[in-house]
Image (cartoon, rainbow, N blue to C red; front, side):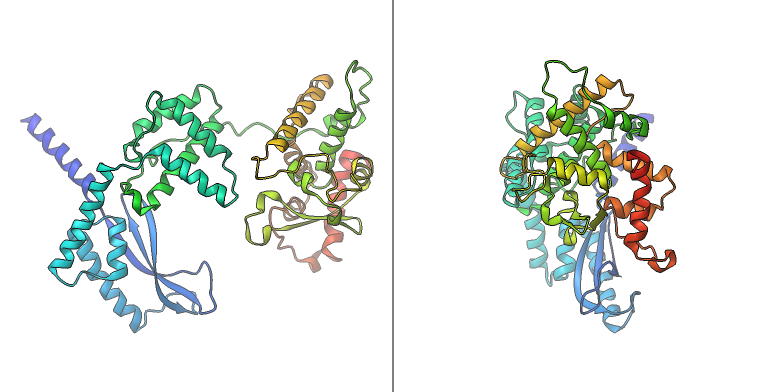
Length: 439
């Protein structure tokens, strides 16, 4: 008797898993106002996938709240009927979008066509399954054509290839939670948790991109949904103390024998220059041009924000004496870039020359750190954390710190503080300079 009950329970669970729940509602999308007003859309939600899709209605309203006028009421009535049809046929998200876009089929023949098309798509996915490596290579090529970085995706493909060896490829529809957990465990044997999480995130991106392609007939499921990220220790203090920074500044390399120290001295100068102009990444220093300097100020946009609208916030910081001395000492005055001895990060070779330079840069910093017996890890990225920490310890306004580091445009009322905003910002910036460089 108990066995029968268990079988019935399992059957019910299986039936529930097969049932697709689609909900939909008319909403006013207030995220972006067009010239015509805010767009009215239908938001469709698949409770299994936990995924939203939107269908535009080509209706606009000026109000920030949806006004239920006659047009909206008519469309809402039609939407109720469409949802009834979707539920009765247990349609998935993709099929539901088609119904909401095009309406309920007018007769039994059209209904049957819809059902057959759905079945045909399912069968195509079984006969000619979309293969993981084949699609990943296609996706990498698409990104290359858009001149986007593909290094991590290429590395992911190599690791997947090694993981499933001797198999040459696998169907995307065969990706299950068990496979993902095994791959995650495989990566953990040679990588830190943060790197493993990064690779799994890129893997999920590839899977989602495949799902978007109708010609691939990927099943509507999310095997990544229940995959837990590995725990990453974020408690490490990534800043460098003022005491250690002063040791870097005053180090004379007298105890270094048989080593050309010029590159090491220049590396220290550049690292401290990163800090002196607001704690900026080496890639931003690399891209600086002489045209970025005007009236004793350095103006540029962060490379990280290159894909944002207008390139993200503009950084406009004062150049204090230490930064000016580094520019005068190491600047390549006959070139367009200030520090043209650093290889330009070109897309064509996946930033290879720049990445090699960065590796040597960080190795030199590590060697100096070891020689000085400093307690902190010193790499190029630490300048940003260090500036932020020192500024915070000096009780500098958080909005001003974000302005100096190019995080966001400040909402500070300039008049409230008195004077121009640059005067206020420069005065706060000077506090960090004096604490570190003693200017």
